[in-house]
Every structure is written in C-alpha cells, then in structure tokens.
Amino acid sequence: MTAKFPQGFVWGTATAAHQVEGGNTASDFWAMEWAEHSLFAEPSGDACDHYHSYEQDIALLKGLGFGAYRFSIEWARIEPEEGFISRAALEHYRRVIASCRAASVVPIVTFHHFTAPLWFTRDGGWEDKKSVDRFARYCERAGRGLSDLIGFACTINEANVPMLITAQCEAGKPWQRPDRIKAFAAERGWDGERFAPYLICNGHSATPNLIAAHRKGYESLKSAGVTCPTGITLAMQDWQAEPGGEALRDRASWLMDGQFLESVRGDDFVGVQTYTRVRLGQGGMLPPPKNAELTQMGYEFYPEALEATIREAARISGCPILVTENGIGTEDDSRRMAYTRRALEGVLRCLADGIDVRGYIHWSLMDNFEWLEGYRPKFGLVGVNRETQARRPKPSAYWLGEIAKSNRLPPSNDPTVAT
Image (cartoon, rainbow, N blue to C red; front, side):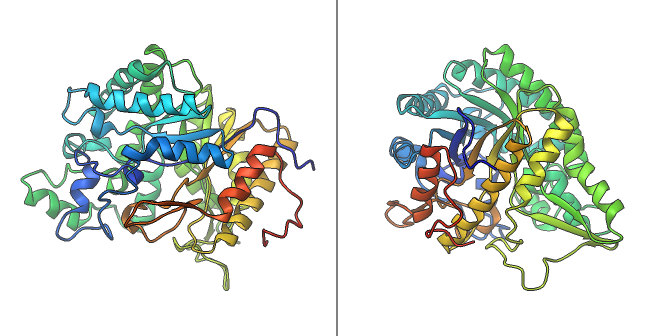
C-alpha cells in the first residue's frame, strides 16, 4: 500500500464558532451555560477569542502546513432576532473567509454547528417543523452574502447527533426532556416543553426536520450562488456486534447513520466525523473492553473506526467523502500522533480500494470549549493559555503539518510516533 495521498487531497484542521470565538451572547448555549444549575461544567466565556484573533490563527495553521480551515459561521450572531440579518456579522465572516483566501487556505464553512439563536430554540428548535424554513431562509441570506468566497459548504454539523444522544439517554424508557432544562426555561417564563437545545432535544422529533432542513438548505445555498461543493456532516460510529448483538447493531446503524446517508444521495460530498467504535451485545451497548485505553471523553481509543465509517458512508450515500472531523481528547500528545497515524493508515486503505476520499480535516486546531465538558478535554494541535490567550503549537501540530505538506504518511518506524 502506497503511503502517498492523491494529488489535490485536502489537508486541514477545524474549529466551531461557539467553541473558539467567545461572547456568543445571543445563542441558546450561552444562556444555558450561565444558569444557576447549569448542565455545563463551566461557561464558554471568552473561549479562545478567535472572533478577534482569526487572522493570526489562520496564519498559524497555514504556517504549520495545512491548506484548509473548516470553521462555522454563527447563526445567533447573523440572525440574533427572527427576521433581522446583521450586516455587521456577515461582514465579519466575509473578512474571516477572505483572510483564508489571502493565505491560500481553502475555507470550509459550516452553517450550523450545534448552537442556534435563542429565539429559535425557545420556540421549539429542531423539534418544530418551522425549523426547516427558518434554516433555509438563514442559508439563503448568509449564502448570498458569502457565496463568492466559500471553498466547501457544510449545512448542518452532525445532523444525527440528536438521534444519537436521545437513543443513549432512553436506556429502555421513553425519552424525556431533562428536568433541569424545563426548570431553566420555566424560570425565564418560557415553555419548558418547547425549549429544545440541539444536544438536549428529542431526536425522534428533530430527525425528520433536520433531514428536510439539509435538503432545503442545500437548495437555498445553491440558489444563493454557492457553487462550491456542498454537503452535510455526520457523527459516525463504527457499530460492532458481539454474539447476539447483530440485530441491535443493524438497527442502531440505520437509525443513527443509514437514514441520513440515504437522504444525501446525489450531494456533492458527505462529511464523515468519527472518533471511536460502539460495541453492542444482546442486551445493549457494551463498555470498552477490559484494559482498553480511554480518551479524556471516556470512550475507547480506537482510530480504526475511521476506515469503517468511510466505507459505510461511501457505500450507502454514493457520495465523495470528506473527513471533516477526526481526533482525540488527550493530554498526552504522543497518543494524538499515534491515533492520527492509525486513522490515516485507514484512509490510505480506503483510497487503495478506490473509495473517493477528498481530504482529511483534523479536530481541532486548538484546545477549546468542549460543550458540556468545558475546557478540560484537550483536542487541539495547538494549546491555548487560558489567561493570556497565547497559542502554543504541540509536537503533533508540526508532525501532522509535515504530512500535509508532503502529502505522504511517513514510515511506520517514525521515532516521533508511538503506536
């Protein structure tokens, strides 16, 4: 198997607006983070101040050797109140994208990455059918303002996550909205049953709307002049069955991944985002094997999952594949390199078998706000001083940057990488 990637293979790294920008005060997550009995370990606050530091961060990733940057534009900044489109926010994101272009970095723009305007979530969020037209309208208006600069467009980040989280929470009983979320909404005079944040909404209700919103958002972007490759991204697991768990595996695979992949046939690409595997037995989800290495997120260190999900996504969707997220939360940077190397070996095997994989985008550019977990998990190639906001590239940043520049995976006896 050759260690060289095809000419034109896209190498990049990623962030999401709420996780790095800071001060996203019109969003639903910001409100929840500051609640008295918050589900979040800590508030996002200033995050990495990427809203003001984007130029230096783009220059940093370019200097490391990456040719693409995947990031999100923030719906809550662009449409802080329903129907009001902030020209100032759109101009800000035009400057971000233009900075990518000036640095010869391909901008991969995500239109929705978990967070939403507070007004949207307060009025049912993705559980309400109005979400489809609301999202399509946002895509059309934002797309019209940015279409000439975007390199790739992603409509919805991990559109299957509400279904995945709902299924994990059900554990044999019907899904219920967390009492703390209902109380939080009620304290503010909102309807607790209609306050539906992305990570805490009913996946059964949200999934049909998310699938429809991607389809309508895709068409809205195209009609707004977005000519670049456009697709969706999915959080895919390598679903594996132990004896007796085959039927459950097949059901989970279709519910979490398959129905979404079937809905995107004919799209320009599908974004695959993979971190680990899930093992299922006759009675349900199994814990990681005894003595298995775990990441800071508590799941199994299993980089081989990426190869399996690329193959599954290509088989069902028929679309070209862009790996839009892959990485590991760890304090041990040598394990980041080991994980990434093994994941890239899987990408090479897919390419050798003729699967159309267009690129690899590592999560994440820098240590950032990891949602409910706060700032504890370290996914970044670049460390960030929480007091000074100083950036410090880790050895993995230089190692992966060299791979990107050479478009080749170094020999397996590379002394800088333990397996």
